Image (cartoon, rainbow, N blue to C red; front, side, top):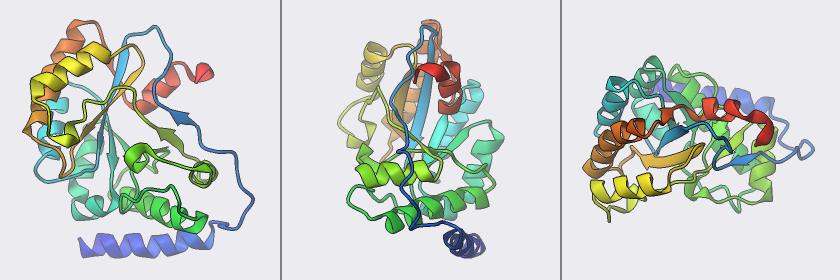
Length: 234
């Protein structure tokens, strides 16, 4: 684990050398919460992992049901559990960046944002996943500096259109299942968590929702696949 962390830190230094932190502000990153389409597709996403307790359970369900999903991982957790990210990649999952320390980018200057984003990306790549191009903002908050910086780094910002609020631990698996089934629509992005803020209710909701949505004719895709379905309209 220390070797992985050392490699990440060294690579961050290399990234900084070629960042052009003081470069002209680029076009802001695109923010996507869903994709307008008539095709019955839906993207499940999981934030804040990987964790030894919840990630293997959720990944096991997805793998068994042949459901691709997108995991927005925290760099520090990746450093602790690089093998779980490797398992996600092997299972055909997509890995997105959720920052290295899960810092809210709103209010930070460009250099601090670059550090947070690049360190997260390097942890992901060191664990064996492709360089991420999708970023999920902690708490979903941003400002102009955050979006322009993410745009200059080549990211698309991914929000969500369906939120069962599993991290609050206020709802049962059935309540979360009912909420998703009530609010889902073609092109939706659903947010769950597999971090320390996850729970058995999340696992059970995911287990129940997959066959329920398939029964309604939905097909599961990663966020990247979802964006490519109707690229010209988002």
